Image (cartoon, rainbow, N blue to C red):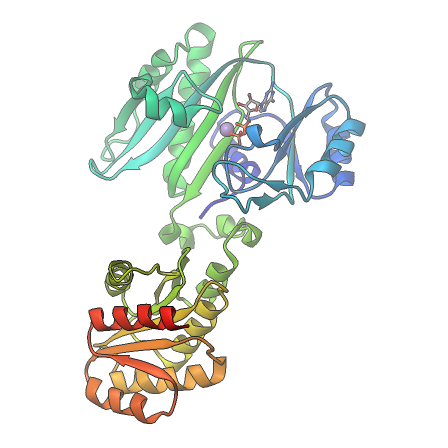
Length: 388
Ligand code: GDP
Ligand code: MN
């Protein structure tokens, strides 16, 4: 799960990462109030969206007074922020973080991710922090230092010192730097993060270390252990159809094609997407309705697939293992009646009672195209698209 910068900062600050004073606001009036409370000469207004690259897109603004903060925030609230991470549709700005502005001497990058190949967390750092870190990673990867952390012993102080030296954080900066790196690691582990990143970590002109921008993602499978983080979820930032699907415990990911897929089992769902592509079409979604596809899940699945206006045909590919095919067939008939399907539907059912299921679908009087195997199903769906 993704959370906002201001929420991530709250979490990291609790573990000892130094951050600027600041507060989130939802209206220009609140912005002015927060700015007055902060009572400093220079402020930063930061659009809170689940995407980076805000600086370059106009989502980070420096202002010099509470009045100016209010005026500028009026332009920012409601704006559509298009960054290299949002896609062309962009993200609407609904929340602003107001912080005191830092005077920046140097911008560094530090982050922790999981190195799956090594089964270890890895600290990645670079002296080239700021808004160009993707370019650094792509063009001069030697400028990124990696330090793996042994899970059996956890992060050691000598590793934090090694990172500090690599970033030329010496003298009076060494101690706060080491503390910050240990704190980021602690926060990562304590909150079951899948990513924790400070970019930039800055050295200020008065020689302080500050986490200017932070990002943390939480492992969804561990969220049940963190009810306080679960409350930070911002549904405005998520794909609406995916939010709807999660209510019914359906694994749904929206894609760009026009063939809606209803499949049980993640492996079969991926195989189905493959055969659709091989047959020359593009899947509109990944959808795993789960092992025991009931009438209700099939119906909800149809509703979600069809709410995507790009869908021109649906391919149902269900293997009757835990669930019998005849029950699925009845579910499909029920669901298509209730939901009102106005695109061609190709159905391929295999497994227990597949023959009975085929018979039920045949006799249903509904305009369903029955297929016997995967490639036939894919061909039929492509034909249906072409003749539409
Ligand atoms: P991002 O573009 O979404 O990664 O947002 P950041 O919070 O990282 O801000 C982008 C850039 O804006 C930073 O790299 C800084 O150069 C600048 N910036 C952000 N906050 C401050 C601040 O407090 N003072 C100054 N001088 N610049 C800032
Ligand atoms: Mn940043």
